[in-house]
Image (cartoon, rainbow, N blue to C red; front, top):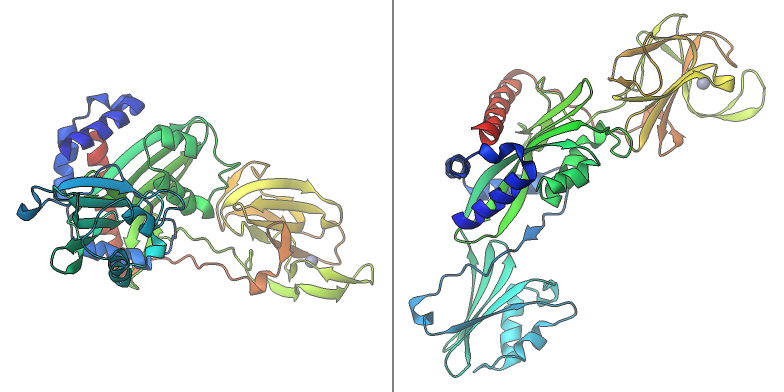
Length: 430
Ligand SMILES: [Zn+2]
């Protein structure tokens, strides 16, 4: 096991160049410290909100140690091919039992229709080529052991697993995904990373060259094997220019795994429904008689009556996409929050200094001031929330709430994130 980890590490080191001086020994020692109960993690996984494919990577033979009675048996490993049925696989072997009897009994424990391409089955035959035992690898740590002696005896075996935390850092020169793969970060981790930051970033457009990424994630190993599965991201940091986005994994009091920044603010951003203080809703979303044209027209935003000069806030974290005159909208700002959401602010009197196209803004930051520009009958803010390029009703918008930790839960989080960070830095630099 250790030799193969060294190999994995060596590859990582070659790619990273910078870390050539790191010792494998300290990382391996760290792994031992981090061994915790696997079952605890499985429970957490079930509640995981960030859904992503839990893919297993198979790199070795099935790690079932031979029992004494099996010593004389010959092992042959079959990797299930596309379109191949279990019955067809059995046809290549000899049994002292009826094939369909075996299939029926196995099917009681594991639905053979769920047999996947690349799944492994080990057959153990005696010197007369009669199969005495076979093992189906159900997942990276669960085996279905079928013994064929006097009877057909089927047992499910859970393998011992070890848990570790892996850390990595890289600069983006091409894309987060491509550079991540180059830095030997598993595909599943990168998918989770992109999901994690999807509330803050539009990965197609926001990521610039020389963006810095630092992360740690869990890996679960099967004892005496090279098989592993990827768990949660524990820590993730992205630095774009002067902006740092940083999240830590945390198990909330409600029992959910979620991500929070150092202040205990949840990664999920809701968009403000009222992007200014003390305003009165003066016109809601929907059909109405236009106050100027007199025609019935769809009102694609909501209006807030407020005195000229009232500060207008960014509805969410994002990048300014448009600042300037925009026909009937008058002085207008549009912010892109991520792939799906944008917000727009119309009839402004003026823009906050520094607000220009491409500038990154945070939720609640002042971007401009209420006015009466464009086709407007009086000082008000016309506010739009745009989902997939279509205006939607902000008042009925259901977005994930951005939970903010407080009290005892915040204290627990703070202790937790300091540990995560210490582990991460220890992994990288010790
Ligand atoms: Zn309006």
